[in-house]
Image (tube, rainbow, N blue to C red):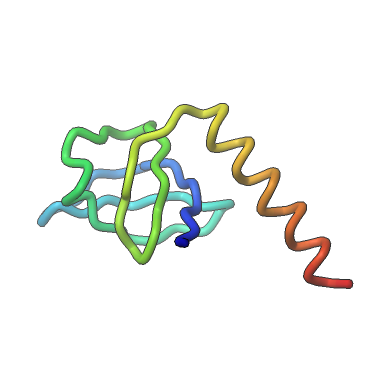
Length: 75
């Protein structure tokens, strides 16, 4: 099982890479698996790769559940 984290594409860079915003943290990711992605799209990121393009509702729901999991980890 792998865990994907949603991020919003804020820039398309050279060499099949993009800059993604993940909860106000920016990172460069590979878009080799999602070459059709464009600025403003949300993607599911795993191991530095955009694995799939998702809608904003799915991104928000995933982030919500990840934050809920954090609460249990702190107990």
